[in-house]
Length: 179
Ligand code: INI
Image (cartoon, rainbow, N blue to C red; front, side, top):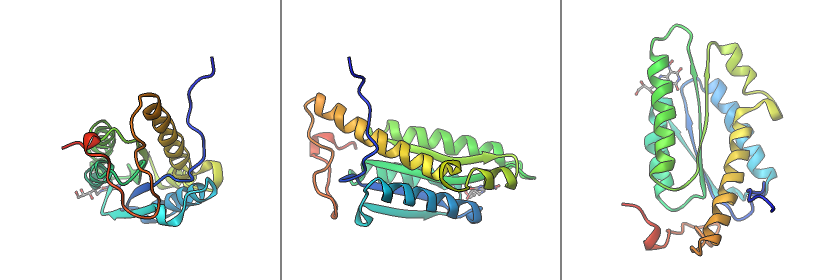
């Protein structure tokens, strides 16, 4: 039996990206990696919305809002929490990961964790490098695969496609909207 799995084809898929501005010298690189991957996979520019938030702690709220809007097939969260000297590290990274996971549970939309949690700046830059060493690109691939997988599962379940039109906002069918 052929396993069910999502393809890496982003044509006709819509993506929301939530990117934190804290440590922007790293998150800019993650964003570039993600956008490059989405473009190469066939996503249209008009099908991508990038939203910037102050820090990783703020990512979950915006990711949840985007995921529940019915306007995206997947939401990609990008951030960089660097331990350095800050005692904030544990709190911020724990809340970011927990909140991002919750956003997916509460929306039934893939919300992808592309937040770096590193000991120092060198490690962060290493994971925000070129091509396969870029965690933003990896998060984008995961988003495309998961969006396609859920779409196939919807079809198997006889549900309507999550959206039908690319290029303008389309709401989920009322029956699929969460309150
Ligand atoms: N936010 C980050 O995204 N990364 C960090 O490394 C970081 N540190 O080190 O403090 C950080 N702090 C800000 C935080 O995310 C919130 O924006 C802030 O606490 C306001 O809620």
